[in-house]
Image (cartoon, rainbow, N blue to C red):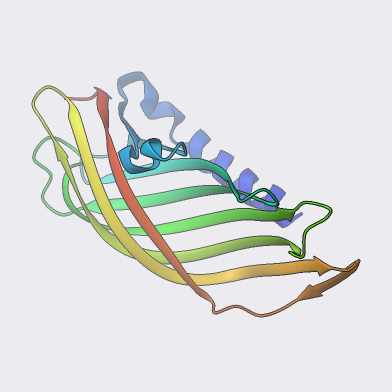
Length: 185
């Protein structure tokens, strides 16, 4: 139920930006480091005004450790950015507030000594960053942030029994994006 509310809120924010899409400035970025290891992390940053934008980001990563352990992760992030001195519209140094949902799962093969685990987190926080945009529309965006997990559900199953335990409420956020600007100035 919490996940449904989160995606409903994310959808509402996206719909609120629709009137500006006719003359929209949208920066689409990918994380090049994650692409090198086979993961995908993409973002679309919608300029609301020259000084404010809203970014929606999603990532998908999965892997296997040895022959008996698989993991996957799907982070979804919404970020509101305030730009202090934009030169090309929604660029330069910024402060942000973020809402981040991460769903991770760790699955062991049947004959393994490892336990299955599921971890869902929803957090809020603040950060800083810098976005550079070239005259040809190439975008470079880097940022970091920290916040607090308001929902933190970590459970694991071992020998048919499910356990849960507490984890620190610290939630970290990092952004490295290279992409292209569509529309705008």
